[in-house]
Length: 350
Image 1: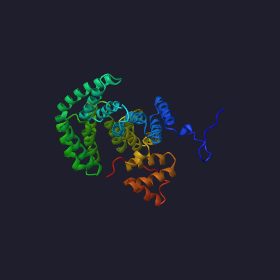
Image 2: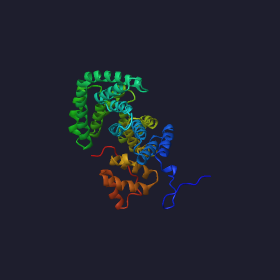
Image 3: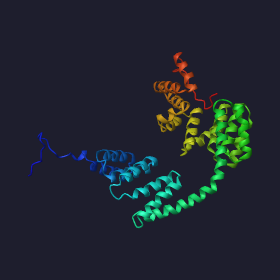
Image 4: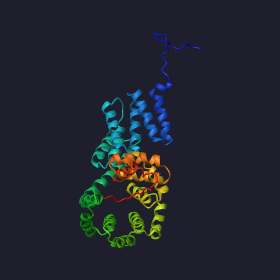
């Protein structure tokens, strides 16, 4: 058996396998094959850190970043590989073209895919590159056709956002003419109908119910309308009528973020605390902290499920972040009222 060579200090010159870039690269490949993408990224990053001169490590890292939607960072890595140009890495142009396409930067994507095809007329990605180029030509033509329509849509969204902002600030009467104008110009823009119904209800105008019924006749299953009706009837003390709409909310798990939040906070507001807790905890603390009133609703659900200690901690944090309801609740806590009284969540805070 041969002896392991030693250095001048009498220590082994052999580098342990777990300290090599190859080791982390191959572990990254295994994680990627199991679809553990975030773990794969960490392993590829480790491989790159240890063996920075291996282009394949960088390209693989960029590829996985692209799969999780980090297109800009992926392109930065690919551009660095191209700048180094230590070997034939023209496939970076193809990967960058895909990233630019996902970002909607079709002109840049087209330039990149053309550079790839010029350098690699017969390569493993050539057919895919040709398909991508054809798709990009189509997108560029479509983009021109839609420019004018997009301008109108941008103005509509801006108008609606102004109305929503007024509602959030409690300037209810000021929001109504804006919402009525949007509905007049865009009769099937249901979001404006729903916010108009909310504004009218908050002013005590029962025509809010008629607006909701009209929306459901034309757009059956409109989630925001169902949530509004659950709230309207519950606030009017008609739990029996509210139950029909609450039952619908119990069954849905929307993929859209705004819809998911609307269902979760509505369930909390109507007293469905267990379901509200289950929905809200899935959002994660960082997302809840972006919306202090929503964080407060999470605390309300916990308090009413028998966890006042955890709830107090959340109320304190929500108050620090600016939640009006949380600030009022913390004042009640200082007066010794928090543990004995049931705490409610109100979606509409004036």
